[in-house]
Image 1 (cartoon, rainbow, N blue to C red):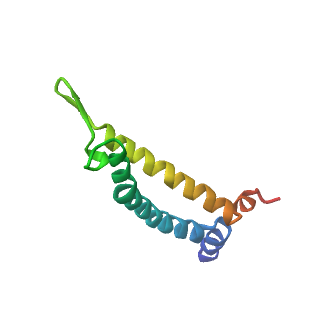
Image 2: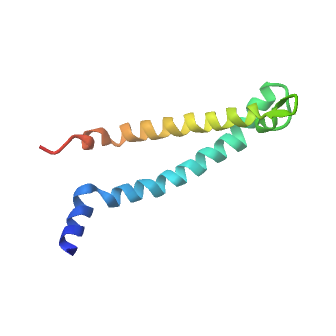
Length: 101
């Protein structure tokens, strides 16, 4: 039973997946800090506001639309997708995705 488990771990790359998961969480924190602490204030200044981009909102009736928060999350996603894509390409991981013959 343990031999089957060890073979599964080796063949399916579970350790690599776990490492990628942990590193992905760390990269996500760095990207979020980059967006919140550097990019959002620059965009806020460009829009003529001294406060952060997240505070930009408008109200229609009793509903408040947090457009700045949405833009901030979208920028966060785009940067993270960019980092993952080019990290994947730079490490040459696309060749590892081929099925076994």
